[in-house]
Image (cartoon, rainbow, N blue to C red):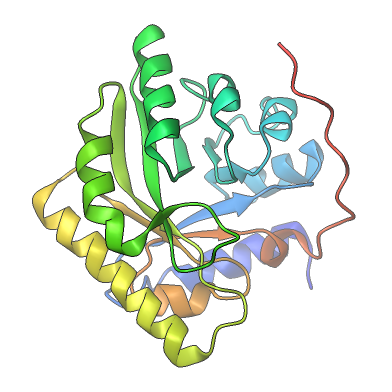
Length: 230
């Protein structure tokens, strides 16, 4: 494993060929548990998008992430959406109508439009998101809300699935993305793929990947974040 700078350069070079359909792939650096200095180094090395998993860490590293788009990629509790709306370029993990409605309310209150992705659950009960078979209804309902712009879909593959299953899930997500992109020009992102599976996802058409350990090295022991306060 190289330095952060070497890893960023290597990944960006590999991404130059695009995904399996020749489309550009956007790299989001997943910065969970990483220090502000590590985030700043990744940005200086060429990272243009950073994604945080915890609201408290998003706030703590806000200044360090200057110069890059700030994304939120973790599970988002409805009562913490107030810390992100209007300060975050893209919220990847909108997996319920309840959360979408709160983001819409806050966006209207702040006279802004919040870009989001609809999170799709690919069959894991322990994960959040809209079941794949309910994606159409979720898209129609959420995209009609004021103050929200749906930019695409996000999904996480099962960690221990067999290759044929994972490939099939990738293909189904790609088809979902293409179906809506053809009818809605605002749909531009299929965010799917992390350090362990991003090449498979890219092969099948993901155009946004979220990498942590591939850029920063093994994740340090998870620290308990301070409580989110006003």
